[in-house]
Image (cartoon, rainbow, N blue to C red):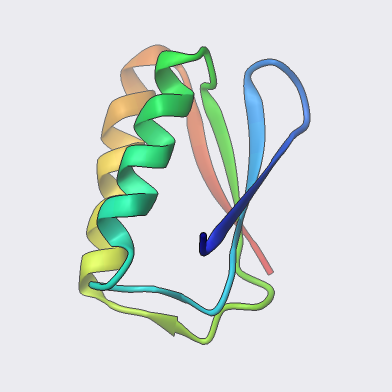
Length: 80
């Protein structure tokens, strides 16, 4: 797995993106986040401290997450 999830609160998670978020793993990221939203997460902190690659497919998966949580008063923020 290229992602680690650390809960901060019931509604807030830190998702640590490892080496890349790109065409190879964007679908996995999207599914992982959708599952977390269904479980009650609304706020996502995306930790890019160890990430070297972010392509348009990865950005698309982030925007998809934003569109999913925004109507629920959620947020997607970036760290590092």
